[in-house]
Image 1 (tube, rainbow, N blue to C red):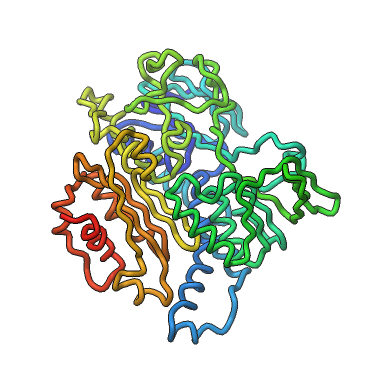
Image 2: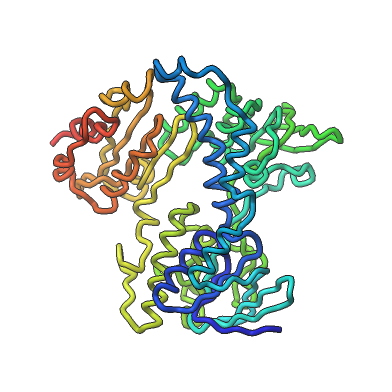
Amino acid sequence: MVAETYDVVVIGAGPVGENVADRAVQGGLSVAIVERELVGGECSYWACMPTKALLRSAAALRAVKKLPGAREAVTGELDVAAVLRRRDAFASDWKDDGQVAWLESAGIPLYRGHGRITGEKVVEVTGENGVTTLTARHAVVVATGSGALVPDIEGLRASKPWTSRETVAAKEVPGRLAIIGGGVVASEMATAFSSLGATVEVLARDGVLHVQEPFVGERVTAALQEAGVTVRVGAEAASVRRDDDGTVHITLKSGEEIEADELLVAIGRTPNTEDIGLDAVGLKPGSWLTVDDAMRVLGEDGTPLGDGWLYAIGDVNRRVLLTHQGKYQARALGDGLAARAKGETVDVGPWGRHAATADERAVPQVVFTEPEMAAVGLTAAAAEAAGLRIRVVDYDLAATAGSSLHAEGYSGHARMVVDEDRKVIVGFTLVGPDVAELLHAATIAIVAEVPLDRLWHAVPSFPTVSEVWLRLLEAYGR
């Protein structure tokens, strides 16, 4: 058995683990990182990057076909094989050589294998070459992420359904794809695979993107149906079986049966904490990890474990299951760990350098469906539930000068949620072609709590779709 000691030990070398390790090293600490799969994690190989690569080519083709003068130049259809090759390139062909090289350049030792916490500040790594014991002087950080949740539906596991991983990495496009779920993964993959030629059927018990503003789900559902996707709102699977010939049969609670060549289950996520040694520190294996504003893991009594040596960031703490938000937590924690080690002040107050305040107030998210959805902050319903006195302002994106230039038949919608007591924006949602690039302005407005009176002086360029900012303010009034 080999034993090594570092200032910080990080379990999980996805983008979140990489970021906290990098910031801590930049702060002068020694850091070891442990990874049992590919360095770079879910986002690099089975989520963000390859997913968007699958979606982008079809989105570009749709955009060209909506632009007179350009659409006449399009003579062919989507090259599915080329799309899949491009997807493979963005997933680095599921090899992590480049990511490993980056760790080496950053001075972060990599321990390949399964990491388990065996005691206070101790992590055992079981790899091909045996067991290595890593001891942390200051902190152990859990950044193990999450995996797809497969519900207890009769016959489902035995039928070997696809999760987001198998779907994103598919080598061929199935003739018929059924999807259980209506969230981000379900709606994006319905968009992607219908564009690639599959017949897609979505079983969306609660509707499509139902946690967003209602108009988002309505527009995305309508667009999916226009693309030939069957969307069954309220449908629930009662049982699943796969024949010897590979056909999947999904029996609904209504008694109706649906057949498909592949079935994607996309109803949520579960934490990757089942076998990382939580029981050794008095926590339940397989559970989400509750943290305080400093990202310290809390015990059942609500206080940090021991002297506050165990931290959890990214999906595993369930604050926000988004890569960019996990990296934000990682930057704050990495800087905080370095500050603590040096005896410097650690600022975890609201909007402090070592806090992840935006997790609760200003989370941006883009869903790359057709049309795109982009949102930050609170929905109107969430703002009301939080006890805020709000005013909702809506505007038709198609009425902006830039929309008709952007695409023929442009259709979209914008909503601004205003806290009437403070006269600041607390929520902003857009749906329409290419609205992702409009989102960061709203994020800045919410994070900085820019008063509406000052926003009048932020003049949008003409003619752009960003003119929606002026139109929303005009609708609100001074």
